[in-house]
Length: 354
Ligand SMILES: Cc1cc2nc3c(=O)[nH]c(=O)nc-3n(C[C@H](O)[C@H](O)[C@H](O)COP(=O)(O)OP(=O)(O)OC[C@H]3O[C@@H](n4cnc5c(N)ncnc54)[C@H](O)[C@@H]3O)c2cc1C
Image (cartoon, rainbow, N blue to C red; front, side, top):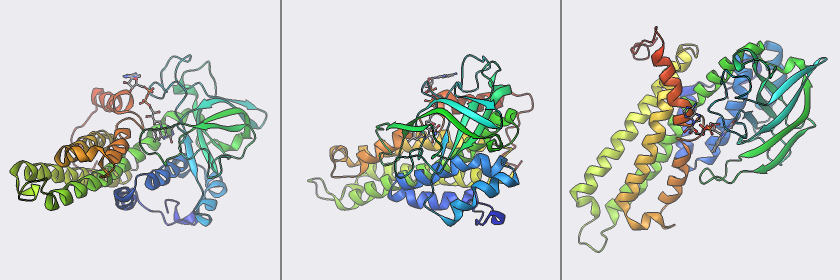
């Protein structure tokens, strides 16, 4: 549905995706995360690919809706310093041009969907790498499209995460993986731009995933409060502290929902140029989600940390939000900090639709 009309898709907007993602995440986080990761993997082609590359890679995702894409960004040693200007740091996955092919070597972690359905590799993996290890990422970062079935793509194992447990988080080794030189979307000094744009699209949408999980927690707490008396004489919602907590939870969910809608719309309305709101949505909604699930647990009390309620599982899923998709400390707040330091920073740009 995200594929443009001219390649057979229905060109779903980020805002439409957010509406669907909230509903799906309300029921279970794993399915929308799998869809989001396919969108993440395809973003470099969708937004930076040539017409020829889009024709080559996208239509299969329209005709076969079960196809999985993946974005291989995170290195074994993390992702926060991927763009460190020192050439010896940052992304160490290297692609060397050999004749008319790129040859890729190194290892990636947390490549969601990367193993495909059958453990043999996703249909399409976009790999963040350096085309010259002696030059800084600003001059050498690239994203290369690799069909998961290419010889040398090895799915080593799957990381065991505390939440998002049905999201597939594999470790993938690339050993002399050879793909055509034409698999590189955009000129290769665009790598930083491709990564920033790709992760801004997800940043806005993660707001919707957080809202879905918060809704699940609220619905659970509200139903408990209205029906359970806890050995008392009245349902616990009759106690003022319980009612006030429910009010606070629901207000926060509404605020996060509208911020998500605005940031999804704004990101695309500005041609992906304004990323501030998307990044703020990711930081704000993810941390709010942890707080809201915790408050719902406080409201329900001790039974919330057992399997009598879904809240402990929701907390496991919520804890992932501030940490993944560029952790809020190592990546997201730094992105905002860098924006604020710019001489041309305009704090009203997003509010005024610029
Ligand atoms: C369910 C799930 C799905 C994921 N999907 C994908 C995926 O599809 N593709 C993918 O590539 N990755 C994926 N990831 C990984 C995720 O995107 C990571 O958030 C990202 O790679 C960065 O990790 P990090 O922020 O913890 O950085 P790290 O580099 O691991 O840094 C760890 C910590 O060190 C500190 N730190 C490091 N450097 C700095 C600095 N310069 N300034 C300040 N603090 C610093 C911060 O406290 C930071 O939190 C996934 C993870 C999970 C759990």
